[in-house]
Image (cartoon, rainbow, N blue to C red; front, side, top):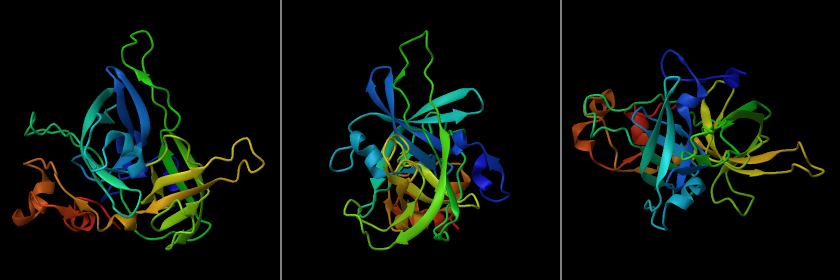
Length: 274
């Protein structure tokens, strides 16, 4: 399928390696020690990322304020790695999705802030029995930066499945909004990862998976995916926009510094939405 090895970018369908657009979300446990708590993916060039809100629970208090340090692990080229601090988090009040921003170092490098690649999103529901796939970072060990003898590593992988159905009204009491059912296997750490359709567009966010390994139902995976459409009315504030960027120029002056919705960011070209 289209997403066997790549995700696609806006415009000329330039191919992007997964690690450039799909990122591990890390929590600092203690000085020099980090844990992968989930997966996220960039939705703008200046560090906005989307994930499942429950991934970020450990980083925030009941008001959504960051109380523990979290990072996005960002690959720059083949060898350089940035630990981008998570600046802020906006959650969706009705569903298990969130949008945050990773530091783009605009204050330190005003003319050359850190930028990233972004994926195409789609609010269209796939047809039943079509293939879907996610890329995520499940079941990674704690990263110990203090151990000079053993360099820390993070592993990501593809997990594919079939689209089953769309539920506009939740049947499962653990869900509070509409969701997709798929047969993708979602392991610990894969929550928040993007789910792609056969055209390579992101249709939703990994939310919940049922682990049947070691049981009579092994191989019959079931997972719940929050559709991109659930994000449309999300309010997004505190944007850190690079001053000389095309993204800033795309936004009318009267909206700069204001709280915007996910849909408005797509309308002005910050998010690529089909």
